[in-house]
Image (tube, rainbow, N blue to C red):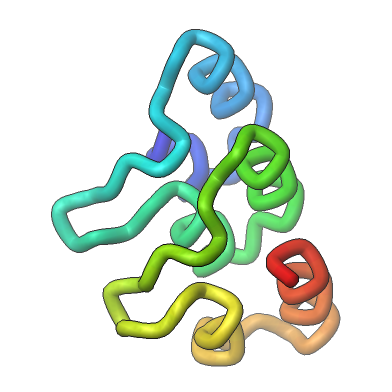
Length: 88
């Protein structure tokens, strides 16, 4: 699931979630699929993960929750605004 999220493969992620992939599983570095999708700017992926129950309040490896660190990923303000609206 995390590889699909990093690559922006929404349909692959959807299939994996339908087959039982854990939406909030964490990598060895403490990243969830939602964190990876947001870090990599994949708005539609973030939307899917949230629809499937991803926890937007988990602390990131940076410490604070995802909503508080969106500005650190270097995306254009429009993309940050879209992600912020999804996570709010």
